[in-house]
Image (cartoon, rainbow, N blue to C red; front, side, top):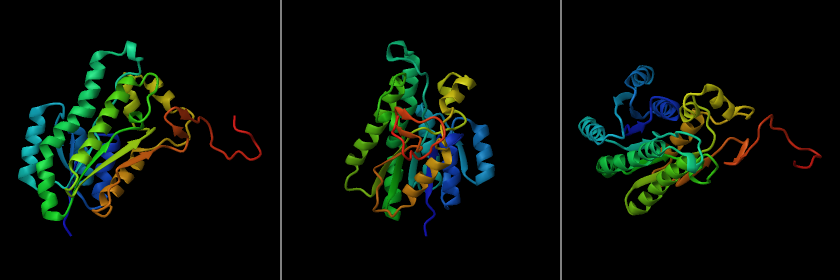
Length: 263
């Protein structure tokens, strides 16, 4: 059995950190990549993942990461979790700086990594049979909503990147997987999006029965990567049961309607 190695971005918190932890439990070697070296050091200590601090919006950082990876071993999987949202403004009120940041961290960072790591993934596939790219997008890529224009646009662009890449890699044993979560309650996503307003961030999840957790998404990522090499999960859309669609969210306890008409 070959010990496979995955590069997991956004690994300092949330879904990225949970993915690094779950892949380690599944027997993968993991390179955990994020900007915050202190958080990565704690993850390294707890899980045995190898920490690598880098800002994926900087070409120089991606080049240095790629050189280090090439010198330190094979790369069997790129798991791109890094991304995020800023602001909940209408399109006409949105700050251009926020839109530019969202496009850079969600889309351009993904493209930088594909360009840089695809040669390493091809080498691993040649040696071991197949390799993987996996992109964590969002249900925001699938349906627009008021106040989400910038994030909708960025995640839709990242989704299209993954879909185009899958077509371009046809004939090569390199899988391209997209995981699109709906509402996931993590420590930072809504807080960062809403400018650090803890009350506003808490209100996003108020009354929602069991939003997804970072571990829920990481479990799906682990399954996708450990599926037989000839099986590709093109797109996995996952939501909490309380969220039937991006715009349809139940608040309050979930219960069967017996003898009742839907509201």
